[in-house]
Image (cartoon, rainbow over the protein chains, first blue to last red):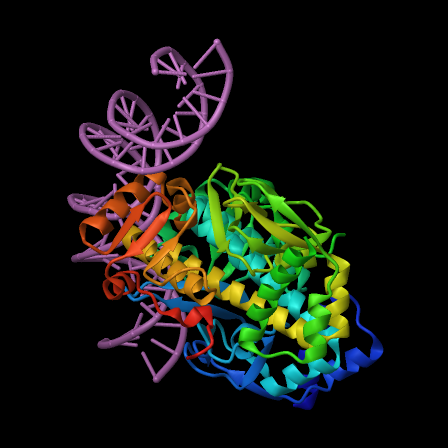
Length: 244
Length: 244
DNA sequence: CGGGCCGTTGAGCGGGCTCAAGACATGTGG
DNA sequence: CCACATGTCTTGAGCCCGCTCAACGGCCCG
């Protein structure tokens, strides 16, 4: 159990260090963070809007999503998260949650007391800075999604999102950029893209007919990356990946 | 000149302290940040996409906006900023800008070298944390705008945005919540709401006919706050203002 | 075998877009 | 003082992308 937990934070550590390496003391201070691991069911909520979360959660396995529902019943998904992501720094540090965090698939996560995080980032400012930058990248992704939803049509939106996932999963070592597992229903895709599930179905069909992507079950195969990226107006700069 | 500059950072300091008070040393360390002040024209860019900004900018007077243009020519405005806002921590800390920062009105700003910021936040982690939280609130606003654009119709979008500005301006001490100056053209409103300028015109007219708001020149008068907030599905939780 | 859940397909509608023209204010130079 | 250009806002008419409503089919799992 402790084995699992440690390796979970390890993935988080690797993610932080991808941007800027940490010293040995910082590294071990991070890995020594007190935490408990817990397995989570699909659709289980990690945090709900208006709660005051007392733990911050690092995904070890499985996928999660942020979302919020408007007064008219429309739901908007803001982002999708994968193993290694510290998934609710956003909510836990600001004391009152302004959106929901929900598992997309079954998985496991490490729960770290918020005070331990606050404490660590004060004691070891380099870690604080690394986490800060991580949330800045999250913000960059939020902005790109706003652009996606606000200014691109359905086919471009879908293409853009599929490209983003391809790249992020590849960088995280969770798939190839041309073929990956994505545990989202068409209804969830719709809420991420601000479309209806029906139109998501039609859009995916159109992309398949054009020979760009193929989606079967919960997996995505990209047949023509170049064309898909072009159609999706996809420029990965906003992901702020290490240049290679 | 130095007088002006100091008072500019002072406003920023007040904003940081609204969330969590800082110690005397932190306070003076922040105010002692090296910086130069500069006056900016309307439509002048502070940062452009793909640049590698070497300064972080704190607004002293005037309004600014973040935006980015999609491949099809559509522009999306992500947020509006007002005096006291550190307006491009987002871009400067991640080294390569992924969006533009442009003045909405003429104004003045303090420019702080990025290294000085990085340095200060490492030396004085409490300040780092305060700035971090500030960017987390920015992120919360990005999310709300995504929901706005994705899941609300034109009248609700507009109402929501007018409510947000009313509250933020009041908290910043720049207007009453029922009457304020907003230096945005209808085209800029359109790009913030993901509408066309034409539809913005019609929507504003509709809200005026219903007796909710009145817009003349560049000022906004809210005639029925309660109805406007309801129509706009406006719940200020996401702004994370101090509870009072 | 029955019942969710998920995806597909069709038909009709509508909110916001496009295109086009005009109104009005401001500034600028002759 | 007028002539003209420019930027901003308004109004009208027609259209289209994506929505709504409804039915059906496949699949999994009890």
